[in-house]
Image (cartoon, rainbow, N blue to C red):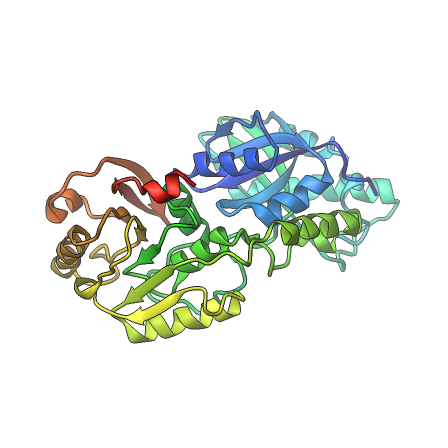
Amino acid sequence: MGSYNDLRLTVTCGAGIERATKKELERLGYTDCPAINGAITFEADSLAVSRCNLFLRTADRVYINLKEFTANTFDELFDGVSEIFWEDFLPKNARVVVNGKCVKSQLFAISACQSIVKKAIATRLCKKYRVSKLSEDGVDYEVYFSVYKNVATVLLNTTGVGLHKRGYRDMVGIAPIRETLASALILYSDYYYKKPFADPFCGSGTIPIECANIALNIASGKHRDFAFKHWSGFDKKNFDLAMQEALDKECLDRQVEIFASDIDRKAVGLATRHLERAGLKGRVKFSTLSVEDFSTALKGGTIVTNPPYGIRVYDKEEAEQCYRWLKTAFDKLDGWSLFLITAAKNFERVFGKKADRERKLFNSNTECRYYYYYGKPNKEINDD
């Protein structure tokens, strides 16, 4: 087995949040990483696999980028996959799982491509390990291929299930937002840990919990498992180093003011459960409250929220009434900023105020807009 050094990594993320993911990578020290079609590729080492999986809040998965080549035919796909040094990554008993996609290419039958890729891997490994058939009774190794405009990219999934699976959300409410998108919304906002934070449509608590993790600098992957940890070729010392780095960076002594509310008592109960599972008991103040009753005397805070769109939660008229109530509550706040994601096409008209700026994002497969309403600068924070 190889040492997994001198790797080429590809980090994937959702449409519209590439900039947030790229900035996270830069903060980790991985620069000059262009983002192309929701994928960011860069040169790194095996320690980077652990660090990226542990620290990245907005990414979907971290892959080892094994090869890119032209594939117009099944023969070219087979030959290209066969040339990869699979024996450097996969043991003799590896259970190989192949998934992928084909877009705008001559090869368009995904199931057929899956079979070709699997056959090419098995053929090479059988030859290298001098066996007639792979036992596949070991741990999973997920191989992901993408054929885009006749260029095949072959990747090895180091993450396992997506990075949005933090481990704290074992039950979900109606129309939950993914943890990765929730983090991106916060990172795109003007939130800073010394500012108060609120989410008046908190649902099962994802946005305020992600906010607490960001404020306290707790690694998003601290409480979950990763596929690569079970691979024989990876040195456990690298993960231990990354975990120690994560623990050293935590700022648990920070005093944060994070408030979250929802009209649904069951959702608030679920949010409280998730907060405790995340190891953040007491860090977020939850309450059962209608948005029309939301108020605070605190100044210069940030609201980040995911209100009903009138699609899965409430009908169109009920959702619009929520927007009007939010506007009334927001107007009474002193120096607060508001950042809101919605799929409602007429949001600004209903809300009654044009946003300072907006960004196109996707919540699951729903096209949305993220609206920015900046409050007055908080001089005490800016001068600190």
